[in-house]
Image (cartoon, rainbow, N blue to C red; front, side, top):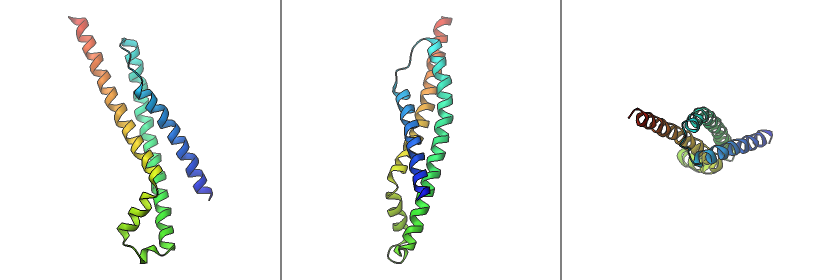
Length: 131
């Protein structure tokens, strides 16, 4: 019971952090060099933080699925269903944490792509100045 409460509390924290990151990634990118450099700095931190959140979400996911598999075995499902079906059944019951794992992965990828795009914009602006 304590572990379940701790997991739910941690999942709420992950969800809140991911929501803030999503909102930032959806905000418009400024065109001024100082704004672009500030965003690059923030995105570099976001890539690291979203990677940490992804690892935490996967850790929670593994714990939840492991607990579900143990419960299924205690309930005797291993005598009624194939191992792959039990795994799918347990994994489908972990859909909220699965969602957070996928969301953290997508935020990490989006921040990385946005970082690359902004670097291209900065390079373009530097080339314009040299003309």
